Image (cartoon, rainbow, N blue to C red; front, top):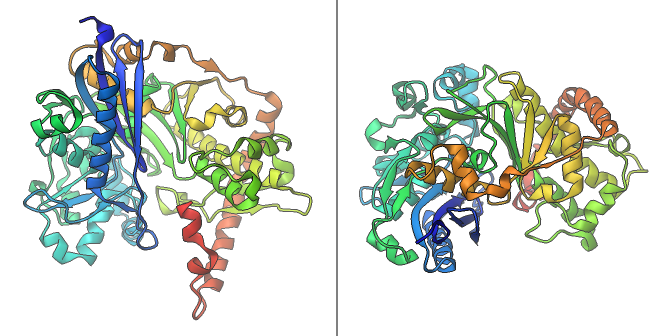
Length: 527
């Protein structure tokens, strides 16, 4: 059986959908299947999911990929997922909690307390993970404060990928990448931090053993039956979605940053050892033992332009599966001059991760005048997202050199997104990767783990030879000058908007006023 009849499966379990890809080992073909599932919000700030629903969707997506490649040998299955989820299990390994996703902010008060006390700085130094409401460390402290009886009934605290790997293999473990996102793992000594565990009130015996991201387990007979694969098929435990995405878009050279933009956005680069910034802004996550991905995820990306389109006019309302703006809506924005004629949007529809002072003020349009049209509103939203990501690049470049940026994600199929982002970055910029870059990265890491590729870069090249031919994005010098001026003004505008938000909160918090309900904020966030 030649290499064209051998495939590896890369599975990326995302926030609202799983994407499974079957990649031919000679790069000649790929088959990608997706399955969606809901993100539930039972209370303000709570964002949860049923872990068994995610497992069922994953099995269905993998099964569809296996059917697409009937007759091919599947050499391994490799897994990727977000790193910030938390699930409690009882002694029978059944969930006693839903999956608390990275978007769940019920522990905001915990994060604030840790910052005020100064404990956040040492936690970040040791774990490489900023203290923020999405952090598993903060979630577990919240459980200890508010659900002590549930904590007493919980035998294990694990992440999403840990649960999925257990359902695939029957083995309960975690891996270095997911562990480094918990806020409880010493990334320098590669062990669970005793100080962090004491703070949380969890013992090391309640957390899974930590494997390398290249650890290999075996598919159980039950899971094999469900997806149509032989039991014993290698299952590579893999890395988190951020590191997997960096690998999938081949942004793993030390001076190259990978920027992904879907509903959310992220900018990351790869370093040889854990790198912790003193500002407590960036997370540091393992891809392998000697490749660490440092960067930041922003919660406000393509969803901001989707929101702008959904609230303007019904005739330009974007489709539910287009998070980046319907073509007609973006055509309106293209007719507006760069800088939106003085209109600026701070795109904080959702609070961002990181220290409180970095989470951003409430979203705001500033400089609004009667001559501004809905095209101005949309362009300002798009520019606001790009300017925010440009600021992430600037701060990251203070820690480690960045010479160029690779762009990936559905947003960059649109010329306007590409042009504005490249002008904001104002450095060599290329479009690379598809929507399945995290699944591809998972597959490439899997190929390396089972010894069918000599190194990570070679693994990506085998599975995606076309990915090496990236498309450069020309930087318009006029746009770059405009956005350079805007970026210089953003800190002052953030301060103004933050103070405005405080004043509005004080006014809205009057007797009998539930401002979140009256403004329909939950509906906006849900959109």
